[in-house]
Length: 256
Image (cartoon, rainbow, N blue to C red; front, side, top):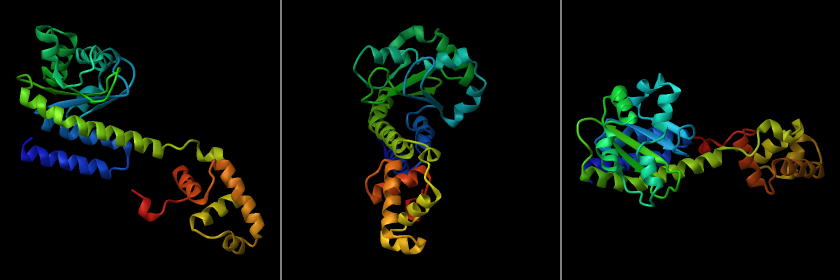
């Protein structure tokens, strides 16, 4: 990997580590991968390679052309011919091109013709996530003129750990950001909400009681109700869970 490519990969990795929105991670990759791999455009497919399911994303260069696609053409691209079948039939996850998999039949396929009409490209490089099983997830890089070289395939293989790390980061952020229930379903009373806010300010039960003009015992009853409704067992986890639900504001240092 040359110095310039290494610097771009490093920049993407650093940006991904600092990104807090899981839905922005793959678009970030999609903006850089075509350049790194010598391509013109990219489609990434998460969750599932089939005609109807899975998250489908595009590099910015390809977005406008795909907006007007009908269901039949979209399904054709989702199916990932011939790469999805190639990877489904073997454990090997090394990057490979459509031309090397399908040979001369690739040029005459419906998928190749659609890509030529849409983007004026005729070669596809598949880069699956290295640990993915069936169904395979990953991305496809497109370009015109000539097939991807052995050196470009080796570079794509070097990029696979970065793709895997970004996907792991996306899934982790989604788990952290997705509450187990909606805030409205928690149904805290106004007084319980006030006690929860004061818990977030690290006040003791005695201090909360003084602030609200109630006894320490009553504060503990409110806290027990809060724990029960949020499904938590201590002050720290309660405050953190309440922040994720939007019941209390995050501390300034915790905000993206």
